[in-house]
Amino acid sequence: MENDRPPILGVVGRTSGQVQFTVCDNTQQATIVPLVVACSLPGTTLYTDECNAYNPIAETGRSHATVCHSRYEWARDDDGDGIREVHCNTMEGIWTGLRNFLRPFRGVHKRYLAQYVAIFEWTHNLKFVNDSFLRSLIDSHFTYFHS
Image (cartoon, rainbow, N blue to C red; front, side):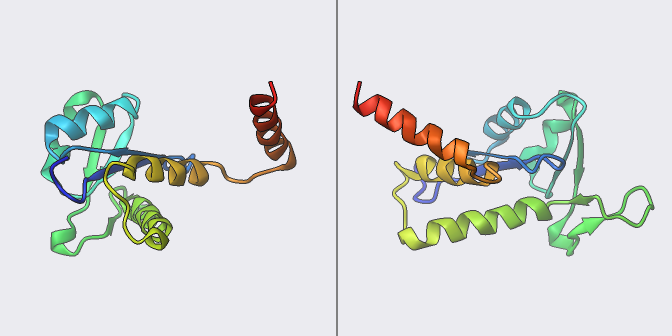
């Protein structure tokens, strides 16, 4: 990670809403494609922007559709049903959430960035906290410190 601002790869499930982030060394195809393949199943349709690093995804048994932001394309209706299903807007909204989460820290050292991102990922994927969850955290804390 030579860059002071290491890239973060983010993937969101369209139906589940679950996110997965990975702090990467770079944004080259050799780095990005294996990470995307590891967190998606064959037959999955991946929606991305026009970044060239994603081009080989179609060769991995996954469908790949893109929007071209440089041509001011933000969403597209490919099947003519009136719903613009090809877009990256869900992930763009999550990026905004991550930036807002990191902002109060006024800069995070790249050594610790993955931990901060993991906390955001965990809290995003945890849709709600109930009493039994909190009790399990408290019980595990007391079991750990009082055993």
